[in-house]
Structure formats: structure tokens, C-alpha cells
Length: 110
Image (cartoon, rainbow, N blue to C red; front, side, top):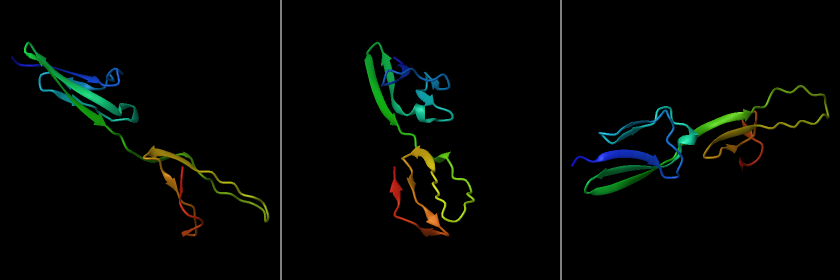
């Protein structure tokens, strides 16, 4: 008999409403993938003879995005400058500081 196909997340979380699952063709479509879509998914095929499960892991990578950017600074001679830049991404971004295109120190991973 033709199997019934269903999809679920292995971690127990429910599938987001944006996910489209074609039960007859066994197709799962996730439009506009986001970080929260990352995880394990299961496709379950079953009929009166039994069932079988296929599992897949979705990994989501993202380019670095600035949480905090540096701004131009105008200081007097002998003032101190503190600049902080902060980015998020996957994998975690690394930071390099340059002055006039030349490295100030070795690269930093946070």
C-alpha cells in the first residue's frame, strides 16, 4: 500500500507554520530559512505493513552582522579612545584591527 508521509522535528519542537510539507510526495520545504530552523528533522513513512524513519540535520550558517559598529571619533591630543565593535554570525566571527590597512595586532576570536 502507498505509505502515509509525515514530518516532525526530532527535538520535539513543532514545525513552524511557514513550513510546507507535501504529504503525498514526501517533500518538506522551508522558505526563508532562519537560525531557529536549525535542528534535526524526521520523515516518517508508514502503511499497514509498518513504518520507516529517515532523519536529517539542518545546519544554518550566517554571514557576520554588526550588533555594534564603531563611529568616527574626534579627540584632543592625549585623550584615550575606546572602540568596541561586535558582530554575530555562524560560525562565530573573528575580529581584526587595521590602521591604514596594516594590522595592529594578531586576529582575535570571540
